[in-house]
Length: 240
Image (cartoon, rainbow, N blue to C red; front, side, top):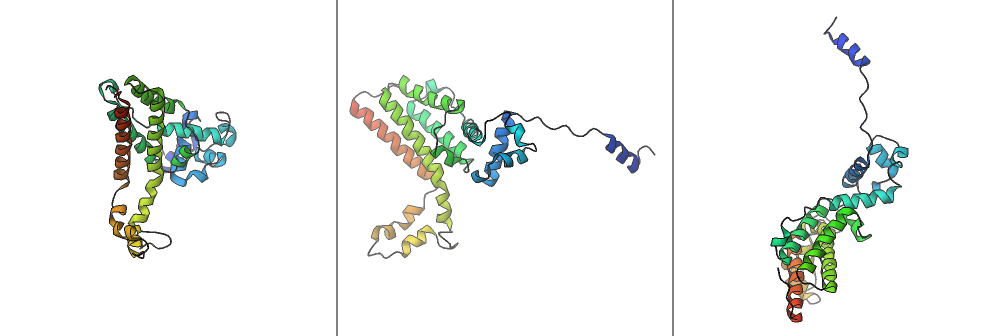
């Protein structure tokens, strides 16, 4: 009888199977990033990625040479999530670097399982190159000499990466130092023999009270203060 459960079941049996979403390079990268975010970097294999995308490894190899190429693309995809500042011509070099460094840290911090890749290879994808070119152009156009511009960019990138890689240490401050879930880093410092480690005991609170974001902002400010001091000593402060 039309409209009955049996009728609907029969029509469903006759319906065409749902079409599979085509495998594209963008889907491969997005799937790899999702897998890494969820399961960790060690779980990314071509077989696991094929399972993630409900396809076969042969299909993946039509688009990429292998896992190494996928990782390169994933790195660049993460950097592509860094919003580049608008109107940089109206900003001073320090403002641009502050904004870009914060944006880069936010993008990498959103994918902590991917961050270690940045410590083992220099990103050379289009998103990475665009960000690097922007920073260097801002510095050169504002009077930085070639060596200082290159050194400042490198120091800035290292500052961002170090902050992201170090951030998991905050878990130990909240609790979970070693095998104990109740011993914090602060309490550990305070428990040390004061005659051997007087300053660690004295500064236990100060050493463990800052958030990762606060530590990053302090370190970045120190870095940029140092750049300004070098410019002043050189006697050629750059223009905005």
